[in-house]
Length: 110
Image (cartoon, rainbow, N blue to C red; front, side, top):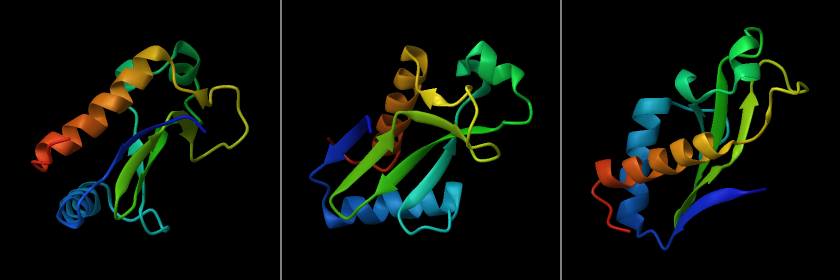
């Protein structure tokens, strides 16, 4: 799987990120996994037209020493649809910017 990874987190960094993610995105049902909704303005035309598949997400996984974001855009409503797939260039930038914003918002210097 392709992903964006920030590693070498300190324990205090992990706790800051966990608090922010828990409070903002809630529990996914799997410890350390967060489903982040992709902004509507970066959806592909196919994704934008598939109302039954919306909303679209990417997964963020938080470990004690790293945070990673998958470059897979998926629907939680329909697991087998051509609208799901590897993030486009615009979506890749959006996902990376999202993670970098988390790092900035929590005061973590990377």
